[in-house]
Image 1 (tube, rainbow, N blue to C red):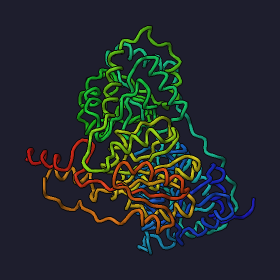
Image 2: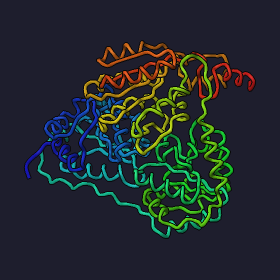
Image 3: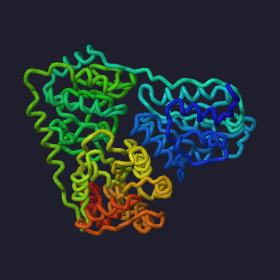
Image 4: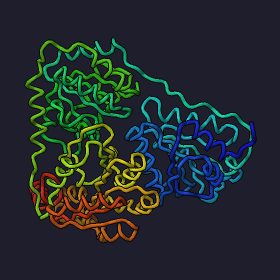
Length: 554
């Protein structure tokens, strides 16, 4: 062993854990860590604000299945990062966050940028710790990677006091974290099959984290063999080829009313990896937590999740891929008793894809299907939060795993940082970010990061001059009393050019295809601004129609 400072120990441990890329905003509190990264071979993606950096790290974890790694400084750096950490927690994404901290000798004096991170991050992360001893860094880092990936994955935060990080010690490295697996058994699968055989209207809900392309294929084969319709939770649409005859749609914020009815009518739910939360159940209205009246078969990696809200008939602590590997090996029924039920569920989804016309010359109900038809099957689409995203969710047909990056936590500003992370992971795949005008402006400063690191993403900015989702709720609740939902916008195409990228403005649908092809040919950051009519508010209702509903309810 040789003597190393804490930053070098940390970097060596990251190499052992298989880390090839980290995301950061530099700070004087972790200079030793930056020095450790200097000749480590680990790419340090330097970002412009910690919120964007955290979302990049989260997207990396979601896409790769391994922890996204983030470095931020103390105080405001850490608090800025909290938005992305919250996304990782609610989306069950593995993530390891290193936060610079004050010198331990200054603790509890309200020193410059001092924060008690154990208290601050306690409700936002799986585990939070502060490392006071340099020789325990390998122990803490290995544990952080283990916790981030075990059971239900999530974010872990390690605070690194400045004096601890710069001190030199001799200490052996820890080996790579080994994650205990929760594997379904053949008996588990047979118990599920027995319960399914009792059903007249079964429905599979497939979601959560830890899925693989093999799991997707097993899900498709199992659903086909057994003739059971499959729904996915909010922003998990890439878990099954949407062209599959058993795919029935997504349980999202703007849910297809026919799918909502079908969820209520189902007498058996096989839930694979998903949490039955408020979005999935429309605010707990589609399923009554007190008495849901269904055969509920819940498979989840966290043994505490089944029964958390809804009482299951059968609870299995196992990963979805391992359960599907068992289920797909079972002999299906001689004939499907659910043929009409499955066919009806599929017809409901196909009917939902039919474009519903919106006002104005730029029509999202035509732009999104064009993208769906012309992009490669492996193209990655990202988005944040806003009514614009409902057009993507409704009209885009996802074909394969790991092509949808979006926050189930509903965080604005997520789509663009996520797109940068995705492009760095997959430079040869098309990466398209859909963003509202308000959503994009929360993290558009990361255009500088995209240019610096050659992340040639295409951003489609949907500009309607308002915080559309909040305006929709405002008009329904307080019609015609517009307050706090109008926004002033820049020329987004010119803004992209000012960063060294390419930009175009589209004012009619017919011009979109050519603009998109031009954007692809640039091989650099590209922004296409779509200027929508002021009346465009959601996929189903115009602004005026929404206001009328509010006035009639008032």
